[in-house]
Length: 176
Image (cartoon, rainbow, N blue to C red; front, side, top):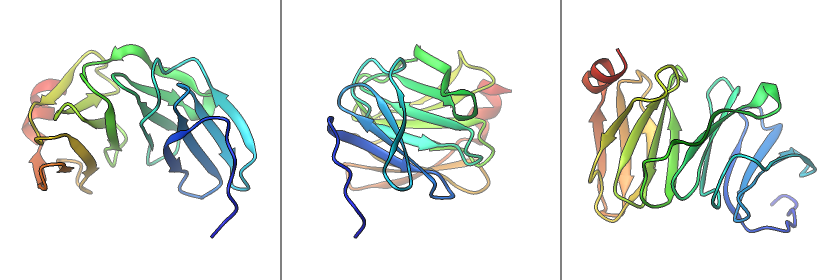
């Protein structure tokens, strides 16, 4: 067991860079905290989220950080001082807290799942378009992961089900 880091906030979500050098923590204070591997705070992202941060996911290339709160998914540019690429009130269609996020293998899409039973697939290139899988899981979505081909999305829900979605036709129709 490693050292514990005492915080002034209640952490709600965490993710770690693939090299293990950076730790991201989402707080109940609507902020994202960036730590080095030793637990020393390096940066605070304070201007993006409107509500407590319930989910975090770092892109596969490590260049973008997705964060979900009660309603919004925001995406930050890790290499440019965490500048918002997708800011608040842009990807805001969940009706309850966003419980999980997943990046497609090519980092073109972000999938979000929420307590509202919905899954959304968002496109970084076509920011105003989205795919919505309503009633994906009764009781809420608790886990998401893209398969290696990026054409299938696997979800887990409070309904005790694991579902595989073939999103290839929806992606082609919505995002071209």
